Amino acid sequence: MSLKQNLHNLKEKYRGTKFEQSFNALHTFLYMPNITTHSGAHVRDAADLKRVMNTVIMAMVPVLLFGMFNAGYQMNGQINGFENTAFLSLDNFIVGLQKILPLLIVSYGVGLGIEFIFATVKKHEVEEGYLVTGMLVPLVVPIDLPLWMLAVAVAFGVIIGKELFGGTGMNVLNPALTIRAFLFFNWAAWMSGDKVWVHGAVDGVMKANGVDAISGETILGQLAQNKELHHSAYDMFMGFIPGSVGETSTALILVGALLLILSGIGSARIMISAVVGAAVMGLIFNGLVDSGVILEGTKFYSLMHFPWYQHLLVGGIAFGIVYMATDPVTASQTNVGKIVYGFLIGLFSILIRVFNPAYPEGVMMAILLMNVFAPTIDHYVVQANVKRRMKRLKLKTA
Image (cartoon, rainbow, N blue to C red; front, side):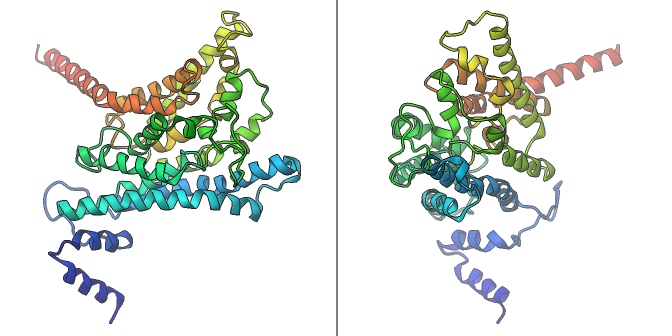
């Protein structure tokens, strides 16, 4: 009997039982659903929601693998010296794998477990949205975060942040950022305090020493404390710097952005406008310093003096813009709205980064803020279009 026939028999076996939704989720993970539209105005395409989610995951795999190498590189570099440490070494990869794999297992285990429970109890199909969220979460948290904290945060994000609103497609806030915000406001010491694991020591003894290290803010924290940087712009762009797993390599994030844009999944309008917004805010701060309005030695001088283009290379801003700001559920839906939405995310990210010492990286708060205002932005864009067309209609009938 063929595999296809065996799967068909199992499908019939579980039909009408409480395990039907769980089996269908596993069955359609690699196979296309056998449900198609027969009437109405529908676009028929080979890509369903699972394939879209899988594409986003593939766009994140390069930064995940790079982050594993970088974790070991930061540890061995501190011990043996960076000049004597080969980046692409098996030892570096093993160190990163040992720290990151448990985070992935807990993230997917808890998140998908809750999704399956809700689908079974409510008797609806298992929703695919957590396939991406489960990958995003380990990439934006410290790699020595206690697993029980991650499990509690994931449960909160899935139940309160998504299921409470009706599931995938109905949530107001980005689920991954909801999870990260829950962690940040409940266990700040583990997220941005002196318990953050910076250089990759497996025993966790190398700490941030007061410098915020989550999602690459080590550099931002050093600037905030007026410390001298020892990283070149090239190192920042390539990702050879301390930071969280997925957010150090701007180069590979750009590769992921290109894949998302070419596949039609990620919005180029949001990405480009967010970069422009961040650049504008960075240029304003640079201008204030160059014109003498902000004097050397003042509280915000270092971060304001930091070149605007390097603001785009450090911290989580590149990762947030590409993989989180473009979330189609929580972002603006209109074309003009996407431009406004993205621009304000970039603008507020740098603004929060510079002025609020509690958030050395402002992209999380900026995206969550704009998630809330995205429907409002779309509302006014639509109303402006309606008024313009009504005015045009009056002119034609006059």
